[in-house]
Image (cartoon, rainbow, N blue to C red; front, side):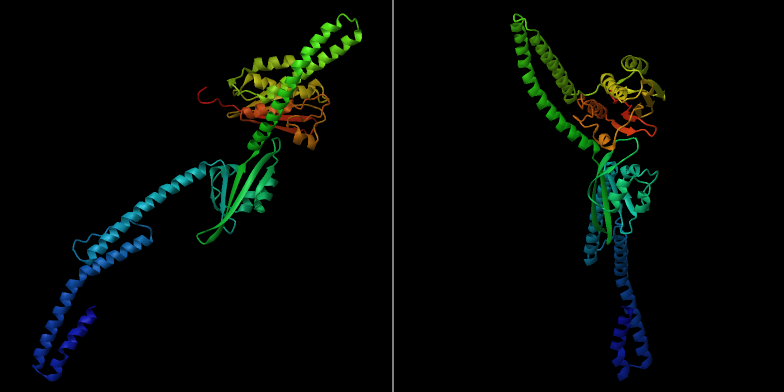
Length: 428
């Protein structure tokens, strides 16, 4: 700008020097005075404009860095004041949107971290860039997973998890933990661009309890239908049997008495059968209490002999009636497993947040096929079994928000492990 002023003044004085209209020294003095005046006026006029432009430049650089806190102060009423006003309004709006986005990010992070589903985000180098608390617990990590490769994470995980995640195969897969029930999980994956880089999102959801709940709900519906139909038949048959007994008393036919006795016995057995399934189909909500283990174990040993071991000094929290039914079923099975009474043991381990109950025997154990189906209603390997005992045990365990697992012992026999939370609800 200043060079332009010099050129303009020099061009205007050129004819004066060329034509020698005035003495040379006067022309030089006049030129210098005019040039200095023009430069001074230019400086005075352009300095505020330069400062304003420099401020806008700095503000725009701050915008580029994500800082929207600066405001322009310009008091003149010209075109620059309108530009400054628009700049300040834009900065205020961007600052408001930044705060809003920050709050959304905090809320989203809170939701993702609190999610029971396992969330894991990896970049195109298979390095974890995001994980939630559930993922850290699932992968047994003591600190954040960010920065760890997927291969490192999967190196100590069960085969089912490793195979599903490495293949990015969506759908159900199972995890077999030693001494615990086989778990069913669902894997969902998604690929998308983030910061011009491909990322993969893994979402793992536990499905064991949900599938078990749906399975049990179906069985309960079937049982209610069967029980209803059987009850409708047992009532009239019992009434007709009673009438038949009265009519046969005057006939003096001993064979009829044996026939009626057999029918009566089968009706009684069928009634007990229906009542047993009715108990499974209509299991009430457990009423949790602290159980006096000395009295509780003493009552159990009056029904079935067993060796008892207690570990820990915590409290066993459960519904006494339902827990007694569960243990009676397990001890009965243990005694019917071709093992002597001395080989049947009950161990209760009490911890801070859970109680572990184990019933072991010295029998033949179970085949893999039987182990996989033993907890299903109606499944039994006994000719006179109802297939209800272990199914009821599972229903009781899950009603207590626990779980049950069957496992063959290396030394022979079967181990049934029941895990129960040992914490009372807040209002207890």
